[in-house]
Structure formats: C-alpha cells, structure tokens
Length: 391
Image (cartoon, rainbow, N blue to C red; front, side):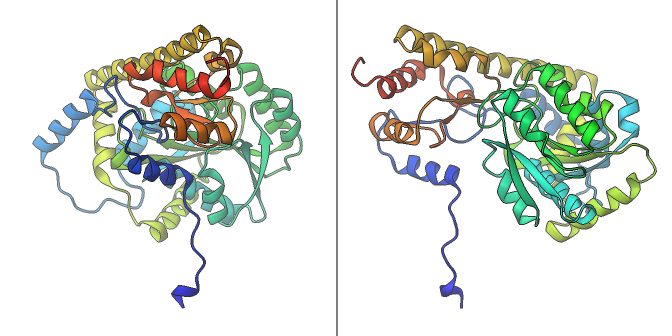
C-alpha cells in the first residue's frame, strides 16, 4: 500500500540547502535559510542566553513534565514583552508552543474549532510555510496583495466578517517590505468596521527598527480591536533556533472567556505534541525576569539589528557603484533579515549556477546571513545577472 503513495512535495528551502551542500565550489554562498550569522558566518549563542543557561544548570531543577500550557513563567513574561501594558495583558492568555510554527498551527486549529467555514487571508507573497500550516489545519486560504498599499487595502475590503487575516507584524518574510504606520492604522480601521480578526505572526521583532518599534503594530491592533491572535517565535531574536521556543497568544474583549480559550489551545497541543520543550522557555523566562540579563539581551539584539542594517547598506552601496542603482534603491527601504531581490526565477537560478550564490527562486536572500567579506561577491553576482552585457 505504501508504495502506491505519490512522492510528497519537497520543501523548497530545504531542497535548496541540500543542493548547496552538494555544490563543491569553495566560493559558494548560502543565503537561503533564515538564520542570523555574525561577520564570520557563524550563528552565535547570545551571551545573555549562555548566562541564563549557566544559572539554570546551577539550579538543577527537575525535568518533570510541565502542564499542557508549558512554562507559565515564560508565558507571562512573553505577554508582558509583546503587549507592553497591563491593560492588554489582562485581556490575553498564552500557551507555550513548539516555536513559532507550533504557535501558528495551534492558533489555526483554534480558528477551525471556533469559526467553522472561516477563510484565512495571507499575504502575496507569503512566508513559504503559512499556506501549508493553515491548510493542514483544514482552513480555506485566500491571498491579498502585500507590497502594493492600495492593492492591500482593496483586497482586505473583500474580507468577510469573522474571517481571519494573517499579517506579519514586522520585517516581512520574504520581501522585507513593511506597511507604513498609516497603512497599519487603515488596516485596523477595516478590521474594526468589518469584524474580521487579525492573526499576527511575530518572528523577527527587534531586528527591524528596534524591539519597541517592531512591536508597535501588534500593540496598536490589540488596543483598537476586540480580538487578536498572535504567534510569537523566539528563534531569531533569542537565537534559540534548535530549542524550538514560541508562544501562542489570544486577546479577547474581556477576561471571562479566556480560560475556555486556553483549554482549547491545550487540547489542540495535546493531540499534536502534548507539551512543548522546556529548555528554551526556561532560558527566555530567566532573561526576561532578570533586569540585568534582560538589558544584556536587548543590547545584543540591538547589535544584531545594526549588523543586518549595515549589511543591507553595504550591499546597496556596492550595487550602486556597479551601475545598478535603480535596482538597489528599493532594497534600502526593506527591513529585517530578508531582502527581496528584483530577480526572476531564471535569474535566481543563474545566481546559483554561475556564481554559487543561493537564494530562493522567488528572489529572497537572507541579508543577515551575509559574511562581511562576501558583500562584493554577492553584489558582483547580482550585477552580472541584472546586466550581463555591461558587467
């Protein structure tokens, strides 16, 4: 029976990574996976994380099972960090999840349980895993334009009452293009008038304009709307990729139904993974609950953001020096770990084939994964693909 199954689709990101691993060229440059790397190309463990781990090791706490909501200290700390005010925290409940992916899936399951027939709207282009997660939860999916402000608002005017709109709170993956504050406010106004629910995916906060600025849109939506769903990842801004640490949050108009919401999330978690891993959540809770560690983490996060910004600035400047200013200018307005290159799938394949530069066929590269000494190589490769005759 098993041999009759059709071959499953291959995740394009992991498929490209496998191809990268088979490429023997020493100059190869992998900008596919969304991980932060330092100037040498290494993904570091943050010092605040190391210090928290030492404290946890010295404490020698039990490894007994946690409840289905995970580490409740972590959940409270995450609510406080993301929402910012006690008024908003009192309207919210949270459960720890298996990273941001687990948060997205748990909240998708909650939508399916509580709003049968709901359509979830995602951006076009979207994070590559959004549609598969939502469809695996049994939800219908439609798209709205992302980089065209007027198109975005026109498309969202078609959203029905009680539908759900999935938005990335900052540092959009894959484009690096975020709405202006005016556009965010217009989006909130549409949601208030129509009655649809924002579903915010927060994976890169702190790596765009700074932590508080990157959380502004999420907090604004929470303040202005009666219901908001938020999926939070600690992979990027705490560097806890392999520890799979995340949080699913639900904000309601009053505190009364939140216990039922938490129970629904717990039930969904029970059937998926039972309980989330403890180690990463304990690290984050230790950092956020300690003033000195929290300050050290914020300082490191700011340095990571500064490096990402410097990488983007250097790439734009080098492209301009190679006569590609018209193509480079939009890159200067993008934010966060990713840059959306103005290249076709064929040109992205040419980058891999002719220059050993790996990005996705949709044009996304991980600007946070660029070693300092490889900027010229990347810019030269892009310029060669853009203007093969002139360069």
